[in-house]
Length: 84
Image 1 (tube, one colour):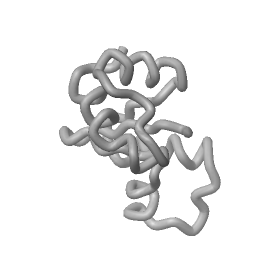
Image 2 (cartoon, one colour):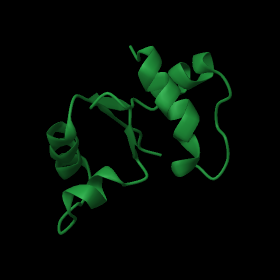
Image 3 (tube, rainbow, N blue to C red):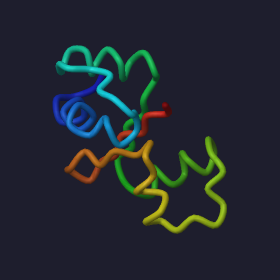
Image 4 (cartoon, rainbow, N blue to C red):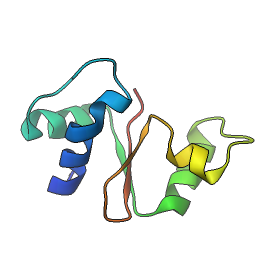
């Protein structure tokens, strides 16, 4: 379900959401993302729409939303949302 770029983005940046490493390998990362039902959004607009439905982002700017600890830039225009 999660492609290589998505898994690598989470593996590399997991400490932005968690105080310590939760996974060590790409396989563990993919399994973790499946377990927590992480969401891949195809662009910024989709991230904002998703978070408006799932969290209180009232008054937050686009930059603040995209730099939330739950939001991981994949590097190809897509974003991963992991609710810790």
